[in-house]
Length: 196
Image: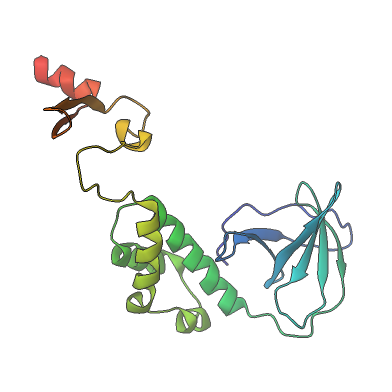
C-alpha cells in the first residue's frame, strides 16, 4: 500500500496495528487503519476523535495528540476496499507532485503509475490520464500567479530567490514613469562566471 506519511505507533498492547494519514480533497486529515478511511471529528485536550468515512458506519477511533491509537469503538458494517484506498493514495501522491513541480501532468502520471506496482483492482479503479488531467490542471493553475497585464506588479518572493534561498532577482528597475520595466535575473554564481 502507498502511504503519504510515516506510520504512527500503536499504544494498544494486544493489537498489532499501523495507522497512516492522508489528506482529503478538501485538505482535511484522514486516518487510515486496516484499509478503512476515517475522517476527523473533533479534538479535546488529550484526544482526537475520528469516525469512519462511510456515512452509515458507526465505527470511531480515538488517538492521542501525538497520533497514537488509544481505542476503537464498534464494528464496520461494510467491507474494506483496499483497491480504492490504494488508488486514492496514488492520486494524492500524483497531486502533491503536480502542485510542487512544473513537469507535465501526463509525465508525472506515467512515472507514478510505473513506480506504484498497482494491484489489478487498483489499476481498474484508476482514472485515465485524460480523465485526471483537467482537475489537476485546475489545481495547478490555482498555485501559479496570474500573468500580469501591465508593468506594475509585485514579484513573489519565491521568484526572487533560487531554490537554495540565494538572490536571483538581480535588478528591478522602472523606466519612463511606470511605462517600461527592466527585470534582470541572475545568481551570484552566474555573475561570477560572466565576469571571470
